Image (cartoon, rainbow, N blue to C red; front, side, top):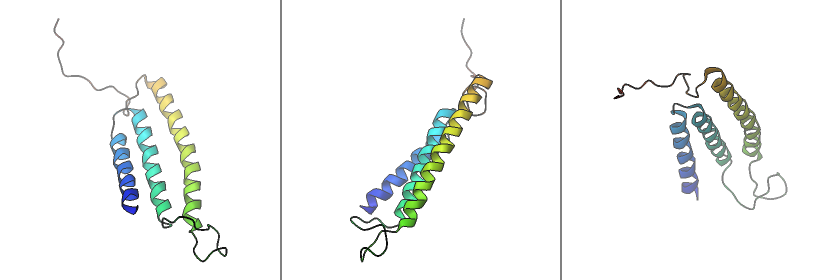
Length: 115
């Protein structure tokens, strides 16, 4: 179970980094979002993966750590707000610059057009 979980986190990190390195703004936003989800899964796993255990101390001999759950919940809310902000910035950049490339200019082609 832990190997599958670690592989999923690693896959999400690699896909997020791949998308961040793209030249257009929308894939960069998706890459940042995917990277934040991978970090959330990593933080969640720091509380040890356990099933059928109480989240509150005192009700059971075995309990799940509530701190990583609270951190992930807070990170989800902050990540959603930041994603909305970055999407608005991307839309504003597209309308102001007329291009959705990260540097604001479309790459120039070196190919000569035959007439």
